[in-house]
Length: 71
Image (tube, rainbow, N blue to C red):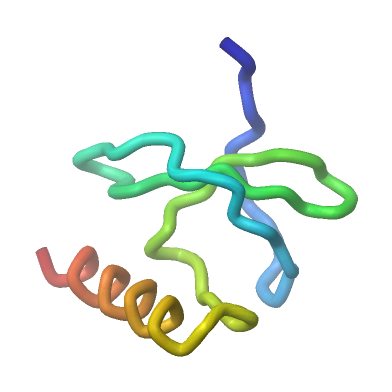
């Protein structure tokens, strides 16, 4: 099993989501992402915004973040 970096990134950093990596009570859904300089990391989906995705995907990510914040 390969270990991925978890951690902070600067607001506005552009990333590519590769896959859903896990689901957790505390962090919710985490996704494996690729960043140009940092390589592959895991981040919480509720902390991300889908800016270059189709409108339906953007809405799903926003809805998930709202649901997760109010659960």
